[in-house]
Image (cartoon, rainbow, N blue to C red; front, side):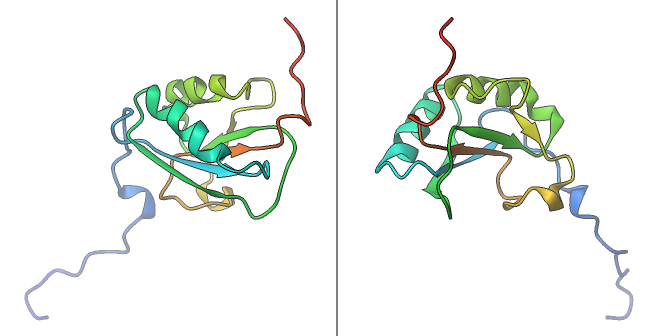
Length: 125
């Protein structure tokens, strides 16, 4: 490989940030045990204009919904998604600014965990 410059160690965060609903990726995991819940949720997210929504099943069940994300720059989009699931401050959405602690793949910018809807009832307004 004479004559070719050897690049220095690539930094993982050197990839350009995905921006806008056409690029941001969303992973919806069904942790409710209710058949089809993730697909139904994904339909709602896609109706907001998100184009890259993936569904799957969580490894274990949980109570209530949880929305997490990697990049603070996506907060406006995250809030729109979170509002669909009543996943609102002060506890949610949760930002894993250190991607390595995120617990899920960096292939996705926003993670929605759908828990058992009967387990947590929102306070009446």
